[in-house]
Length: 194
Image (cartoon, rainbow, N blue to C red):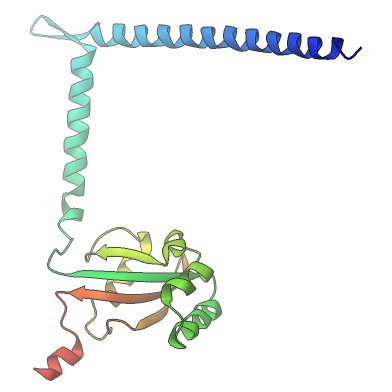
């Protein structure tokens, strides 16, 4: 009896492998047919210009080029809004409630590292990286709808480098920001010293 069990398992596995191999060959044949049909489509004349046939590949290239030109045209105004003269290196913590944000801010003010608190409480993806946002420029679209909020806080001369600011509410939750380094923005204290 014990010798029959391994043999039946072997037969079942062999049958399964044969079925898998057959399915793989069928899938390969379908992919091959689809690729051949696509190549035929690209070679086939789609229309004529001045009596000369224009193949599908030319039509595809024209559509791709026009799409790229249109995309660049529509993005032109958006990319020109980025101000290269100002940069900020920052971190953030995002929480679901204002109470959670205030508790996180209190922990940082009490001496805990911002990155440690961010890893523990932040609901944003960069929270696991200590809340690091990297180097940002005004007008960059990295934070979605919270971008305008970030720009308003980060590039305000009244916002001190190294100090936790917030909480500020957005559709993502409650934000705390820590500006670690900033260029192109004179702080209020710098102006007083001069």
